[in-house]
Image (cartoon, rainbow, N blue to C red; front, side):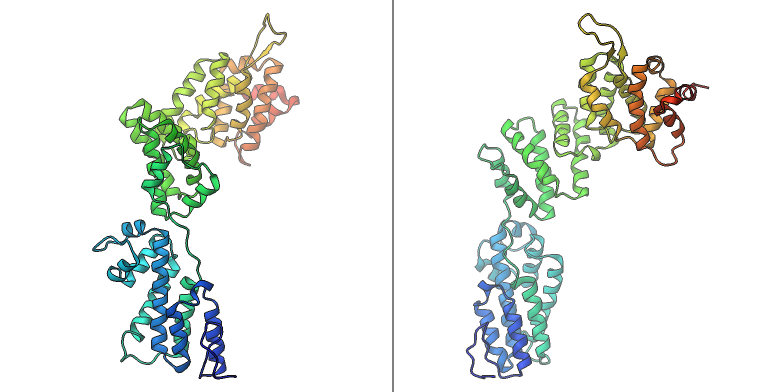
Length: 434
């Protein structure tokens, strides 16, 4: 091997064994391209061939610190200042040099998403390696293995990692959302919001809820929130979703009907009905169920109520199930009558009838119990299904319920009799009240 090679990342002069030469070259080649001519890395390369292991460790750590500072500045110094308590606000690279120690730098980089949890732990170890061997000349001499291990960690977790995405400033973002200049581009919003640290996703989601339910918010703001919030919702944790939806209960207590209506509208926008508390569900669902139950055969009311109830089909409180299922079953069956305008005699609310089968597909055993109870106790249903057309409509609901119940459902025989046209007599016997 030529011992007079020029010192560069790709061509390292060495005075050690060929094996060490190859290890060093392999490590340096893993540094991302624009960092390979970093002065600190070049200094480490110069001293390694002559056994300057302490200096190489110090120089390599300086390269890591330099890279972290620049990445934090690129990502967001605003968020860094929020996360780390310092004696003054950090605005420039020089401020990092003067006021931010290595532990604060690593912690801040982790909290704002420049590095991950694993990287933060490994870098603290690398920092201690630098502190012991480069900061204390009386420590034992580090081996080449120690140097290469430290270099590999720094390269893997920092020097080979690309710059992170820039983080939006929440204040500016909310201000822009209040204007028509807000860019309603789903991909751009996904990139901007999905890369936020968890803490700021939480903060932004709560701000969106607050702005949406505020009576003085403009229609432009609400429209932009309706576009943005569902995208953000996808990347929120379950705990954050629950916390936000539970704010609906605070609105209910306030008694402000406008804010209450808007809070439920927000929940609908993000698809968060599943997270509503029992109190909130009862508040919004019970009046609609009662209205539907009390307006049997008033088709426009049935259409309206079923449409409102459809979004809660999979999360109806257990104490409302009986009346809910009764109302849906009655609405779907409809009634028999005559009309001067139509030749038909089988009447039902067309709009509601389209939605109800899908709502029955959300049933579980408890809802099936309510369905069976309705067949046994609801006199209107019993009277109407004596008509073959109405029994056929009930049979179609029975088929759906049968597919939804568990294998050992206790009243499965009633459902089996209902769907079997040859077991009509047995079905009517099975729903008689004893």
